[in-house]
Amino acid sequence: MNLTYWAAGIAAAGVLLYLVVALLNAEEL
Image (cartoon, rainbow, N blue to C red):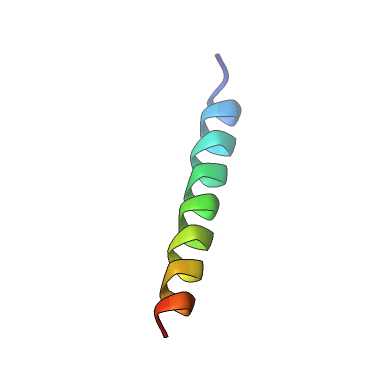
């Protein structure tokens, strides 16, 4: 259980969530 894995997981989740929100907003526009 390394902090590096936690940071990488949180960063990956954040990027995926941002991409999903960006795609949804782009479709609405």
